[in-house]
Amino acid sequence: MSGSFLGINVASNALRSFQRALDTTGHNIANANTRGYSRQRVEYQTNMPLYFYSKGYHGLGQGMHITGITRIRDGYLDTSYNNSNGLFNRNDTLAQGLGRIEQVYGEPSDSGISAAIERFFNSWSGLGSAPNSDAARLEVQTSGQNLADQIRGKFQHLDSLESRNNQELNATLAQVNNLSKQIADLNQEILRAQSSGGTSADLMDQRDSAVEELSTLTDVSKRVQPDGSYSVYVGGFTVVEGSTSRDIPNTIDPATGGFTIGTANFQIKTGKLSGLLALGTKLTEQKANLDTLANTLRTEVNNLHRTGIDAMGMTGNNFFNDVASPPQTGAIDFDLAVPVKDDARYIAAGLSGDPGDGGLAISIGQIRDSAFAALGTQTFGDYFAREMEKVSQDTNYYQNASLTEDAIRTQVESQRQQVSGVSVDDEMADLLRFQRSYQAAAKTLTIFDQVTEDLLGMVRR
Image (cartoon, rainbow, N blue to C red; front, side, top):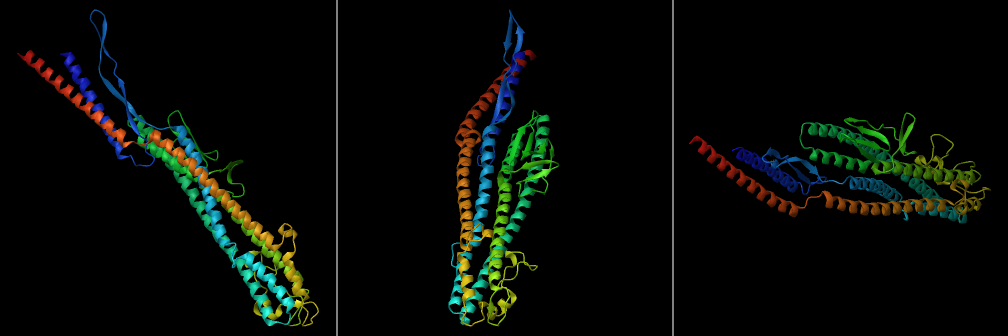
């Protein structure tokens, strides 16, 4: 009779095991389109046989039991994806940011700075040819005002981009710190689930997804500890250790591309955060370039203009507002000098005061072809054109780099899906297989139950 009871136990265990397999398969199918989900598989192990002695020792099989639910995941592919994802997001952030800088300048254009420089010096040459012409003076005033407006306006747009970049930098840093806390919390939940004998596969998927999202934002690496928890590092700085997270301080320096804690400096080399830091440096450089352009124009034009005599018979006046007089600091307040802005007659055309003298205007017009040390021994036009060429080259470089990394990232993701993804066709086949096994176990249980009833009936008689 003991054999019948053993059979019932074996069949009952099999029934429960195949029910768990059916549940897991259904769970896989339900999450076939869930991003970050890893296919799960029920693992079985044969039970130790029941040994008995009858002319020697014999083992009587006791069926099987579930040892756990395995999450099908390749850690190497996860690391490869996160690395590529970080590089893509750095390059993409820079490509988009540099593209916005290009849009601010809008070069080449008839309404851009390059064209404004050309018109400005052409107007001086025109005044030199017709020093008595009020229209020529007005053209100098108008073209000078347009040039100042263009440089000042572009600077203000760049300043707005820089403010927006700083805001996005702070928001991204907050996201990084929030994700670090999520990972630490998930470490704790996973250990709690495992210690109570529960399954933690879905929680582990959530944790890997959080690490993946972190790789979108910053330079991240992880180490699996013996207890299964993750230690997570950003630029070498430990942000997660067990159930504890540490915030990255809001003291990131765009100049170094990292942050300092104590005497240690940590570099952020990939992710959106790295791209924003690099973009901040690019924006600072562009603003400095416009400062250089504005201040050199001020200095060189004013130096000549002060030596001339205007239509009011006055000398020593500036054409542009004076960089040496506060609050003038560069491109941000680049403008015509107040007298010239109010009245074109304060524009000097000659040196002698003779109404027909246009020598000074001709000299200022010739500045266009002069190279200046402050501009890297280049003319105004060449200096600005060279800076625009650099922006264009950088934009193209990061656009191509982001496309390359995106292709690599897509390829690795495809490999991950082959390993971890859910094939509905395969799961349906497993569903039918487990269903038949369940039915067979149920039939076995019914038979053993009937045998037991028969045995009990015989005993009662």
